[in-house]
Length: 248
Image 1: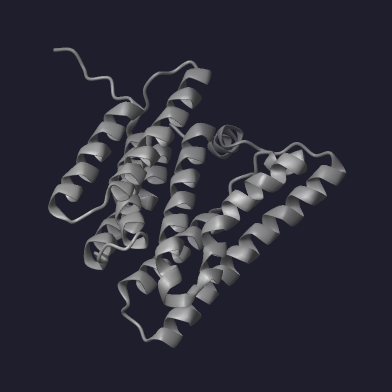
Image 2 (image 1 turned 90 degrees about the vertical axis):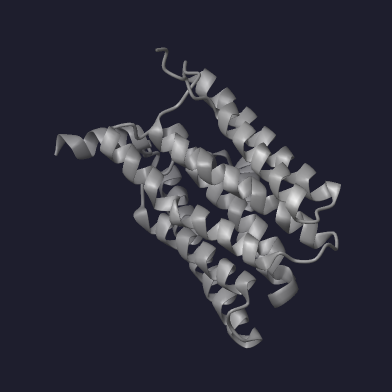
């Protein structure tokens, strides 16, 4: 029996079915499901290009977990856009989907380490899914805490834009577990605000604390990059870091 060769488009297809399935059950304008499908298509296209550049056409178990999270983010994107354009909010469904995506966040890295498949592409894929989820949640939470919360979702993309002007900011950073912690905390904080479990003033405090943590994390990386750039030091890729740790 021939083994199925999974590719990013399998998960894009699964996510598309989920988006359209939700749209069939929950009133959703075309802008909602179109946004969800657009995210799934673009993310799968970019991932496929990344795989081809590395001489691969499929990925392993760790990236499959991340792709599952990405499919859930596609559904969340559709629900948030539907809410923004005026349809009735489906907060319980959105919060449930996001909670599952957040719960899976630590699984892909664990699988990658257990299977010896840690890679720069996998780490980048995981990071971009996290970043887009924070952006989607930030957009949804504007109605509860104000426009300033968008700073949480836009920070990653502002950093990328800055790297176009200052190329050294785009160099690969060494692994730092604190980034994952901050990202997870921000996701939980924004989901808590979306769920409206707390009074308004507490929502503002929770979102502000998440923003402060994110500023600290990005600030630390930027300072490190500036120092390393001045020193002309070589930065460590995830593959080199993994090999170095295994040799110890």
